[in-house]
Length: 600
Image (cartoon, rainbow, N blue to C red; front, side, top):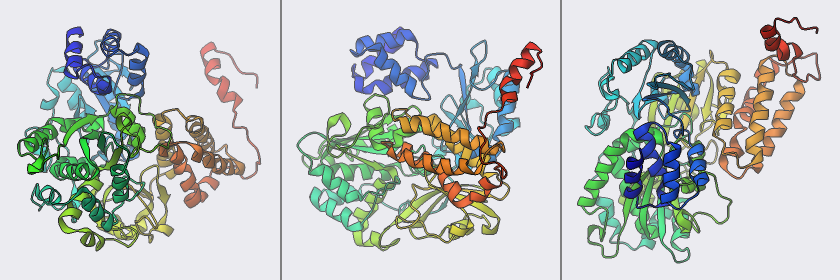
């Protein structure tokens, strides 16, 4: 391990800002990062061991203890549970002989829960040694464990044909499906690679920004900040090296559109990064990808290699003197909060992904304290089409306030889960019809993932757009057989608890208090005042410094707003107060162990 660790450290030139890459390499090779490796890394990078360990402890896919020669991470998201995850998990436990969160005595197999892995359209799904397994059943779980025990390699355990499109590429070979259901101007593959670059190098950077501003395109990550304005702020920032970061850390449960773009249209994305780099005067672009998509690494790196050979990247791009720009890929290691732009920057610098206080904003002081633009995958892809066809063309789609199109990741109770490109202004009802979900049978739709809104049939006529229902792209559909409070709201609340970075006391404490209150109501011990208290406590979370904390109460708040009757049906109507403390339950386990009869 020592010699391998040294090779990795040398590969990254003893640069502590590349700590994430060093740790990922060691974790992938050995299944854990030993204390010896921590000491070696700290010494070579001139860091304290504590600094190395705090980065390791922050991320879900890092461990200082062995995780098994075969590490099975089974998604425990809402949709995975809806599609039979419980039976698959039980089969894994029975076949392996351990519970989740443990490793076999011989170190062969480890079983772990993990949050949404970007496969909501093909659940239940799992990651086994960076390979994705989709549409799992108890039978497939038995086959996988049998193959492991027989000594097969993970890539030889697939029993289905590879997925569609580039999933079949020799550098991918994945059973993942794209499920592209509706193509619009952004997903349209009929464009010539490099044409947009050839066009922009004839313009000044300021002219490129003007065209982007004229399109009125807003960031597609959810916040909706005007893209051209962000580019202009960065270009006009004080002197310094400028950077572009592409946020492909789509950790919002229910979102998978970026995964499809990375698979089918990575050249479009890279061209968008080149355009943004030219506009803001950046020297380097960093594509930050969530760890769950690491199976695409070799494929993406090869596309970058070819782009350099064709001079779409590198020195004097396409003959434009002084236009020097390149792209590197940075993988995360499992942390939803890194989808927040300042947390993403911290992670890309090799640190814990804890959000920064703002101001200053990244366009002033971002990556390595230099002016930085952070854009979403979809935003950068749209920028290519804007530069090819013009801002006026782009404004012809959507609404005046929400121009262009939006990529939606649709999953849950529908016939055709997948990715749909629609113009802003589509109603929820229209989308339900399009995806094969009969509106009269739909109980609720989660718009924008857990951080968004849970809406009912009274709101299905509302439209998707910044002026009404803004969304980063996730729509999860629940029919009338689902228990919204226990199956959905509780799961989402637990997700926010698990993913909090813990920096803010509001985000660290209140979601757990809200969960306890919700469980009290689900256990039929709640009273009317419990609902009111949850509404009041949820407001306090707005004091958190990043979007995760500020929206962590949304699953509860929006469900109370739109499905209050579900709460009121479960509370005690004859009581004004109930502490929620059950003395018998508190002493039951101890009495059973000691054989005593409680005197209550």
